[in-house]
Length: 75
Picture (tube, rainbow, N blue to C red):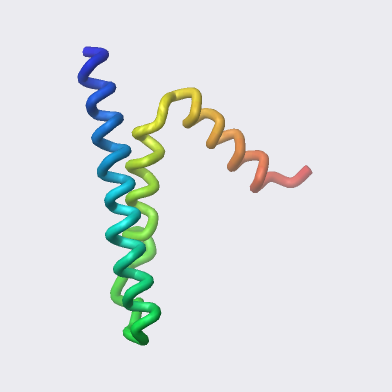
């Protein structure tokens, strides 16, 4: 079962990275060509980052959570 988890994580990373490239290149193309970007919902821009996050190791996921908590909480 360990090999299946590793393959799944690698696939999530690959899909997430390809998604970032395709979605953001399309978004910037629309933006710089003067066309409306209103047709792209905000969650489409976030979805590849979710794939990348779940493709990372558990320790790295934990460190990212801690970074967000530290960044968005008041001291």
